[in-house]
Length: 170
Image (cartoon, rainbow, N blue to C red; front, side, top):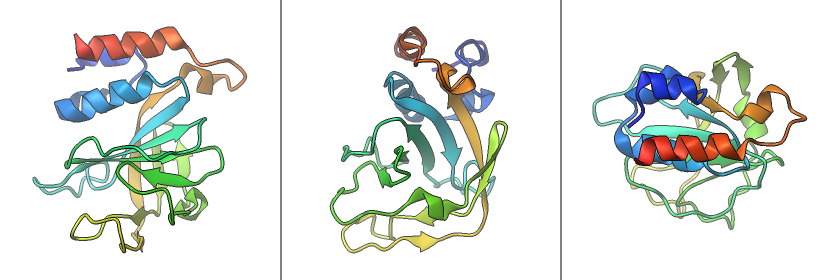
C-alpha cells in the first residue's frame, strides 16, 4: 500500500493513499507499463458524490491504442485512452465500441480536470447491448503523471515505473 511519502517520491498525488489496495495495485501495474502517460481518478469518488457502495474509476492516457483487457475486479473500472483519442474500458469488447474521447469535453488544470463524460456500464454490468449515457460535468484528479509528460520530448522513465511497481508489491 502506498504511504504519503512513497506516493510523493514517485510523483503521485496524495489521493493515491485513499484508494483501496486493489486500486493501488492497479495503479502500480499501470505505472509499470511504459506507454502509460497519466492516470486519473474519475467518477463519483473524484467528484465527492460517491456512496459507500460506489466503485472506483480510473482513466488512463496511453501512448498505445486501447486493446481488450480483462476487467481487474468488480469494484474498479479502468478506461484506456489512446493517441487516436478512442477509448475502451477493461472488460469491454473492442468490437463495436468506437467512441471518441473528444466527446468528453476534457479540460485539465494542473492536477485536476473537469469533464463531461459517459457511463459505459448499464445497471446489469453487461457490456453487450449497453449504450453510453452522457453524464453531467464532473471533476477528475490526476493520480500520476509520467516524467516524460513534464517534458514531452523525453522518453518514458522505465526505472520510475519499476520502482513504483516495487513499492506497492513489497
